[in-house]
Length: 354
Ligand SMILES: NC(=O)c1ccc[n+]([C@@H]2O[C@H](COP(=O)([O-])OP(=O)(O)OC[C@H]3O[C@@H](n4cnc5c(N)ncnc54)[C@H](O)[C@@H]3O)[C@@H](O)[C@H]2O)c1
Ligand SMILES: [Zn+2]
Image (tube, rainbow, N blue to C red; front, top):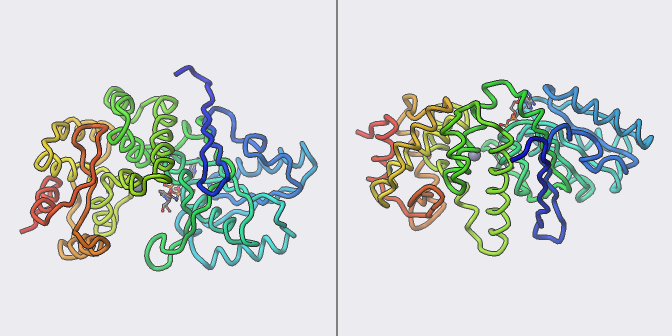
């Protein structure tokens, strides 16, 4: 891939609208967000990216004389509450926001989830664009149209709403703190394991120092292809859950980051796939995850709690727990997995069931 190339996807949202996704350098501005032609733009931003949000607002005012106001939202999950949604509606009302105006969400997945939810529901739906500023946001949260807030359980309330445009500026992602780059890499390498061997090769060669210009557009392509396929053939989207069944239970039980949990979940799924499907890539998968700095074993957890979390997942499907397993890299299959196999997977990440 040549340096400085811009990648664009025009993704049908299933309801006749198009979501355009653009990845490039130096593109985190009003023009790429489709914000310049609007009379009024409400920019919702995470605290850490307020300078970018201010710049976008300044662009809009300077270029068209339109009004652009920035509202700094609480950070991370703190923004994903109905209370904050209500306060944001009130703010939109107070600035005279109308149906012809645009909301721009600037930040990671938590911010785009709540900005999308507000846009989907205020005045029964207004336009929204995202500048996605974390790795996880770029390759996962901003694509696919899921929005939501937390109500006791995570993401319990939400709607599908595709933004008109998603902008991913690699210059912003290149400057991410190492920890955000590390945990975000779990979703990027997951996309590789389920569907793109070039991503796998890239991380195998360079670990966390991987060229984001090589892997980010590729991982976005995996998510876009999967989401689009799911409009026709329901269920394909489930392959994106690779590493998430056991991973999510460990995330909750151990209180670790989503990226770390998905990494451990992929190791467990890899062990199960070795047994059930003759998957030969378990060792290579572990070595690549370690090279990125992601964990391949779980911290100690309350095993009863873990079992209860997995059981709750199980009840969602009357036939038992369904997991994404790899027949090989790039060949995900959805399989029913019994209790013994789950134990085997847990043992592979250091969690002894007995
Ligand atoms: N809608 C979906 O399909 C979907 C998919 C996956 C995850 N999610 C959601 O995404 C959220 C997780 O996203 P996340 O990992 O981006 O977390 P996040 O949005 O909480 O951001 C993590 C931290 O990074 C900071 N940050 C953002 N951009 C930065 C930058 N450029 N430089 C420095 N710091 C920056 C934020 O202020 C925050 O403190 C969760 O709420 C999850 O539920 C949604
Ligand atoms: Zn995930």
